[in-house]
Image (cartoon, rainbow, N blue to C red; front, side, top):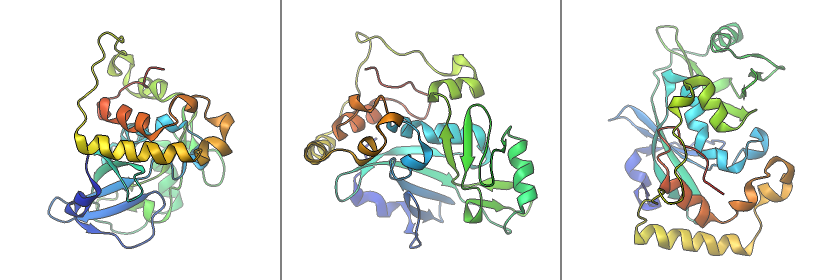
Length: 242
């Protein structure tokens, strides 16, 4: 679902502090936080392929189901750049966990120290698990709010590892594939973004070409947004066909 920027204030009160990759809104009535996420803000740190951005919340949900994201829709900022809109239950924090508690909680999820700041296994690496990104509630349960997750394998394989191959639907053939209808407002936005993209090369692709071998087929904002709108990303979807 496309959500215009003019509707973002309906998510709740905007958090005025500095955030790394999202504009955050607190909705007290729903007891949820809404996040308008720039899917490429930390791509050089993660090293994931750009088209994997739409999968990151799915992998987060498998690793940290206590703080599961809900996909709300696709939007844009004032420049017309694509945004992924997610929401997450709010946490009533009772304080910050100790490093020993963090180590134990991640080990229970099969994630072990790889270096001073990173935990992982053969599928993923997880970092940024400190400060406000990890809270402990009054029951002593740890909540990993917004860790950075780096994929070591393609997103499809990671989802299959955690859910089984039957959980990731097979791609439709070109004759079966039916794109979802796109509103006139969505068309106007993606056309605007497409014109901007044509005038400049993507910084991520330019700086890290070796990390993004599939990006040549996803260079325009129109392709990215149309693809993201077409697939039901809250159910474990596949990459777009190339």
